[in-house]
Length: 292
Image (tube, rainbow, N blue to C red; front, side, top):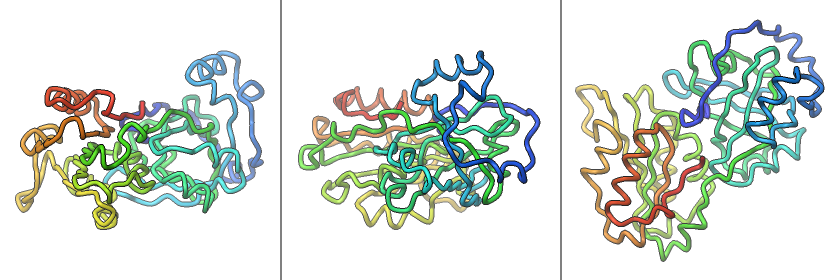
């Protein structure tokens, strides 16, 4: 959300692109921006996050369709243990850049931190936007090399909604590719099975645009009730329709505001409106978690 972070902006550029045969021969060792970028670019990127001063070349493991305009991207970080271990919390993200492309993309990590530790892989849900770095990324093949920054961001601070007995209700909201870090949260585990009311309101235009449907059953088994919300559903759709914030406003059912936490990721209007609804109903703003 890309990463996407749809909730994190993707850079847009159409510069020339190195042949894949050259990319595959890039050495897999950390590179510093100061040695490989013009001074002005170094200053610009360093101003974003000082953690991104080191870039690590890493090969693509796989790129597969996840939904319409969305791609499941796996990157092998098994030869970069420092990079793999820098992912410690769900909701964190990093920057990804391609050779000869000026601007990097910000991407939320979709996989839980345990996957990098166990298998040496980072997984992402990337929205392919015409003219962007993300579009070029989604056109790559297994073995092609990209460069990753260190993992950055504070992620979702789930300690604020622990222990489960004190926060029996957790409301999760995501739109589009904003589901990416939410997947990391759910699959990292936050005691959902110990809480009687954990709901995920997940919005997309239609089912063709909704990623991770194959994971819904497992998420439900872990204690998360999945509520898909379609803004442009087909005639056969019988579930929630409209926008996520409207679907939640209709259902609401906040029995104990002091015992309620929330996690939000996605389109800005959604996060702002949901936050307003929750705060108006007595939920503490400190218990509304975002990853930015």
